[in-house]
Amino acid sequence: MGPSRPIDMLAEMRSPRRILAVLERALTVRDGERCGIALAYRASVRREPELPIVDFLDLREGDHVTAALGLARLLRLLREARLATAGDWIGRPEAAAERLARAVGREFRLEVAPRSRVHFEAWTEDGALAVADVSEIEADEDAFFVRRLGPHAPVRVARAQVVRRQTTLERWLEVRSVARKPV
Image (cartoon, rainbow, N blue to C red):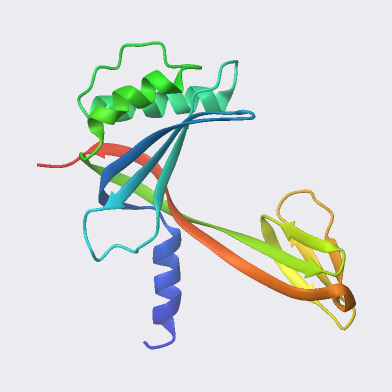
């Protein structure tokens, strides 16, 4: 039973699960192509992991599937918070965040899934190199080979030039769905 327990815990962390959480912030995001609302929640129960619980509602203008999904999730959250859903939300994240401000402090039942991202940083004699979304790092006597997610070529960093290196793991819980707190 001892060796199988860590495997069971890993499977439990990967699968989506339901938790009770309080909406803490609804912030407007406008940078580059991103236009929407960043939501931050806090788990209501102490036994839940201390990972950030985040969500992003994409409300950019245009014919984007992600904007349609972001609008649907916004309307669902407003409905579950018992707030009025009427309004023109696409391209207007400020108005949506203002409406969601009334839901801050309310508790919801969230379905969340764990997410993670690995970053590799190397400081060399020529400067610094940062690689995000790393899938694997291999090293031999001459160099580090950093493989990224997606169709990207590996990055080769010569060991002789590396003064310092650091690999960091960023973990969070991503919101999959929102429902009203059961009574």
